[in-house]
Image (cartoon, rainbow, N blue to C red; front, top):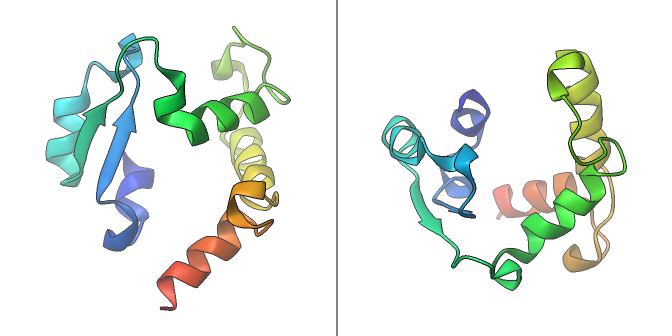
Length: 106
C-alpha cells in the first residue's frame, strides 16, 4: 500500500484485480488509498491483459511458485526498475517510466 500512496493522484484512480485469494483485503486497500477497486470476471484473463503480460515478464525473474520472501528489498526493487525501464509494445515502445513522465507533464 505504501507504494500506491506514493503515486500521484492522477495515476491511482482505480485498480482492477483478479479473483485470487491475495486480493482478500481489497476493502482495506481501497479505504487506505481512496482507490476504487474492480474485479475481473473469473476465468477471464483478457479483462486484465496488462496484468497477464506483466506476470509473464515477472516469470523471467521469478519462476511460478517462487518464494519472494527469500529476496531482499533491494533485489525486488532491482526487478521493479528492470520492468519500468523495459520498452513495451503497448506503449508504442516507450518504457513505463517514460509513459508516466508523459502523463504527468501534460
